[in-house]
Length: 189
Image (cartoon, helix red, strand yellow):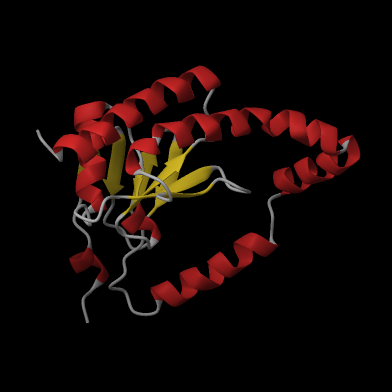
């Protein structure tokens, strides 16, 4: 069995606007600060650790934060009109991103109903979605999530939440140009 310290090295790396922190302590795990959001990684080599994380995950959906509970109650009190007003920009953004994904072809895009992201299937020759994501970021200045990171290799996950309409349009234009380039010319540096 590998020890905890053998699983981690102390590094700090900047990639695509994300900073990865790896800390070698028994009480902490690596964290990634990406666009103001903290994402936590865990040492998969430590026996029993994944089981404990799954127990935590099981509690997340059934134990909403107090803030989420207050927002849900307020939404019920205000009624469906208020909720519709709050999410109208999401609908606009979803439609903007759907248009940007059109170079991938008919039927390549799924999702967007009840979620703030879309799934886009890459052309068959691009099974390495990490490589496509790096290329889109460096060549076209747009960041998406590789499907493999979410258990769906060969796909992209594109979020349309948390953006103003103008920011979404700018990102969508870069994404559309990138996908047109990918489909027409392939990954060219």
